[in-house]
Every structure is written in C-alpha cells, then in structure tokens.
Length: 51
Image 1 (cartoon, rainbow, N blue to C red):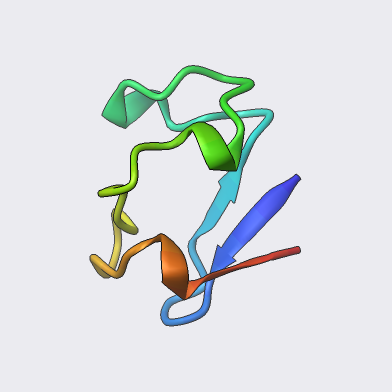
Image 2: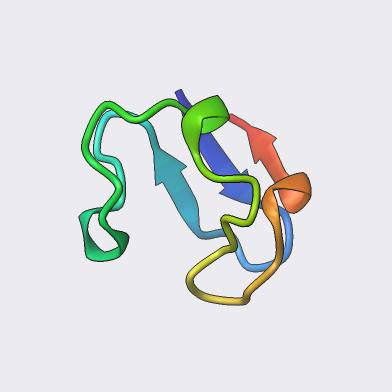
C-alpha cells in the first residue's frame, strides 16, 4: 500500500520503506512511529492519504 502526502505529494510505499530514515522495506504505515513526518515538507501522518 502507498500513502501520499496531501501537502507535497511525497509517497511512502510500504514495500520500499524509507531506508534513509532507518525504516525497513515492508514496514506497514500503522507501524511507523506516531511522530513520523514527511521528509519533504514536515507534516505529520494525519496529512497523508492512502492511495
């Protein structure tokens, strides 16, 4: 599943994870820390939509 930032369009893909931030491939959206923020614009998880 992919999640898109509503503000800037950055995409978090569960399949890819986000290794630059230490988030392993296969990490589910719900398993991301509550304080996860978009690496491009800094908004929180509540500003993402499932794609």
